[in-house]
Length: 331
Image (tube, rainbow, N blue to C red; front, side, top):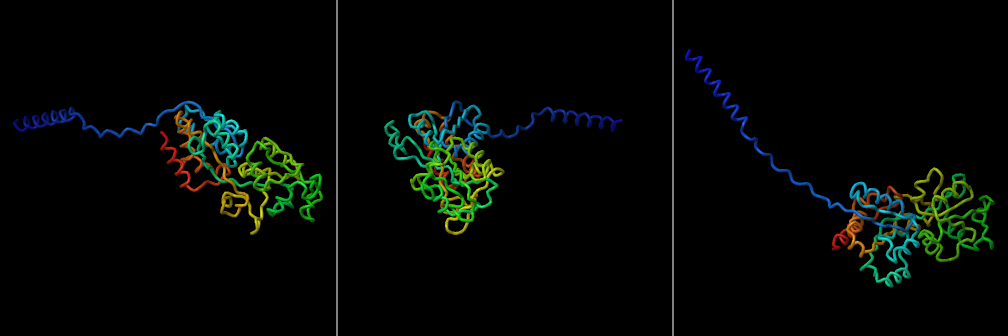
């Protein structure tokens, strides 16, 4: 009997002990570190300018609005480099994209508005582009040309007084059919780069059909086997089913424009150029969303990552990092 009572007592004490233990508050887990809060921004960022740069800048803007600041509206236009500067100089835009460097006369116009390069306007190099000569897929003879042949065929008066040049004028064994020349019009930095740098400011053939829209140029070349046009590498990469890129011999054999050959010191260097965006630093100081977007453009998630996807060769990482350091110092 005593043993039975002792057993009951032990069980009772065990249950009480268990209940007491259960009633003790559990040890609190260490408090989690608060997640870093990203400042929510809103407002507009206005970008206009180069049609060549447009696909890259539009892609950067899309990524920024989706992944960083969905209350900020980044509006990207493609009026052309020269037309873009005409909006940027009076202060109508925050950024001006350009497929060529800003001109001295444009810098002078900025100074008339109280804007000085370096102090009030920041030049940002975005990437490398390769000027690409494109032909119709049915053109099986002009798939490789020398730099000299390309320059000469686009120069006024090189072969005919009326500039109605035949393929056979370039090489005797090519068809005796008239070449149809195409390119972007004077609003575009691509035209200016071609006319001023490639043609060395000499007159272009009078028969050249110059267009505002790159999509129009793609259609025109894709419909005419005697057509040849020039524009940025990115527009070729998105239309390889309709166009063929001419391999250019700069003196060491034909070179195809690719992300691996485009660069100032690379095999396609003869037709390589930098593309830019210009930032109004006054607006960057006044409008947080403008500064924030500028930082994103030069961040590892911006031009460095997206250039290749849009037909541009990215710059060295150190170049973008230096821009980011400058922007982070803005108060």
